[in-house]
Image 1 (cartoon, rainbow, N blue to C red):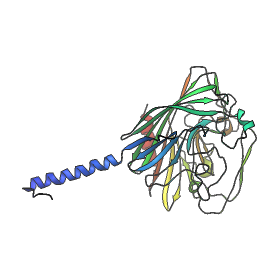
Image 2: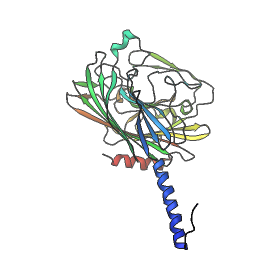
Image 3: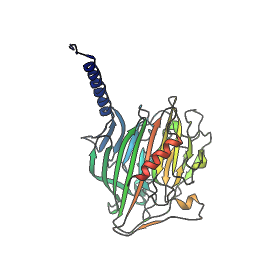
Length: 352
């Protein structure tokens, strides 16, 4: 039972105390928690009581990924297949899982297209990104996860060492992932200009651009993948870039940011990738496909310019290159407007 408080002043102080306590609790519930799974190579990232994403790095995957990825209200913006197929999920490109970072041609090895679907006798043509240690995991207003990984061939010989720092935060309905990846050459390393790279997310079916026709895509080894068209009326996504390119026309263009948006369960949802001015070849080219592959590719100049120019990155042993990207997941009627994105991009550009 609460006793009687003498005087209006005390009552006012009491009410303020309750309000401050409530505010403190709300802030605490918005904190980011980075939680290691004790039995798996898995780290969960929570904001308040809701899961944002999980960092998965088992040896059964050919690269570390963030999967799944949820909005603040719990909508999954990533395709379920092949990890956890959803009804109606496209089943093309089994190497497209959640959010990832790798490259199609490093010293002749394909890190991008490697997956469980590659026959054993073909695996020698592909590389692995193997996470060998977690360097930091901490929560707070901003959650931090840093890890070290080795880019290896099938003989486990290390070509490149990766050190990545991921920062997780929330601003209102916006959930944000800031990534800084340092790649250090162990041997002479050549990232040959290629179409498939570098920082990517495979989007949920709803965020695909609607298409009724089947499409064929051929990789660097001549392997053809068919992406089926359909009339399920689920796909309703669209792209727009900082330069005004929209829809399928966003592919191969350069821009400082690109947004995909659409409806999920009747609500507006968007995913934005923001390039950083310190990145090579800024502003980046966009490998943004209507079927749901959404990637920033700063080194894919040759394919995107129809051979007019190319960008091969060569590192001598001991040399390091850094890449920085911000990804924003938002929802609501005004999900990440252009004004919002400009502010987010300016803030990100100011970070070291």
